[in-house]
Image 1 (tube, rainbow, N blue to C red):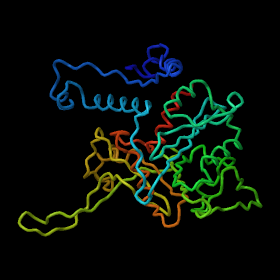
Image 2: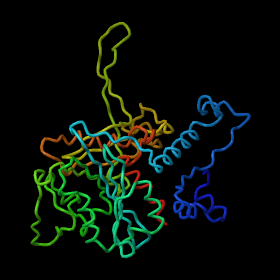
Image 3: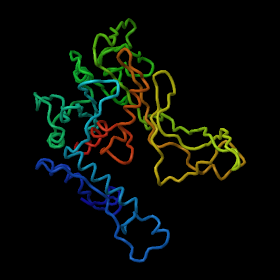
Length: 373
């Protein structure tokens, strides 16, 4: 449905009806997808406005893109998801897993476990609570209804239960090829999974959630890939996490003709934005999305010349950088290949035409936060 955002209702001193729709309609198995209204076409557009129109329509390109993104989100919530591709090095069944700790007020969390399989429909599972002592895997399309009903809410202080929930997500007894994507924020708390912290992570030497690493005599068991066949863990950290992932500024070299009369090629340095995967340290990669179309920063722009004072006001940053750390892999795995697999999930076919901050399965989990009211 078309609806103004929360800022509009606050500015006009009206009550925002979106939370009410999010709370009521899922109980009727009607999920909600909102879109800020698209302004009507101007019958007498200027030349500048005509240039911004989407070909063959009377509407601006940005409005068409917004409508397309909202439709894709609605289809995803209805279960129309792209088929999960297996990584190139994996043969046979493969499972992608994520655990998302969603806030529910100041004192509660809603942990969500989402699994997507190459040969099965995606499922979701919530934590057991006093009011719901048994929580079984459900179709992903049923998750909004469960969230609206208030299921899966646990105190933030229930760290032992959260650690057990994360341990169960690892499926330690399974031998299926599987990959757990875990966000560093919230999850790396010292009482939940401190092994995910920068100073304590040990590559390919897994320490399970809930094990205290701060005690003076701490001697945790480090599990190796051979102890858990098929298991892989990749830690994710978005740029907004205390600015831990800086915005990169790229430099590339290309071969160009020296002049029009010869075929000689010489290297030419070009400054500008960089997109793709960049290795920035041991087992640490930045996944950098292409710059958005609406940000038309010239590729020739430089901030290295102080004499060009006008360049100081230009934004020269890559949007939506994501730190990707393959923390636990199997013997013979290439960390760069697995990092690229995760980065590609941000632009997975039929997921979105605009790269998201998170890989598709994690993005779905974040979308579900809107049903926690």
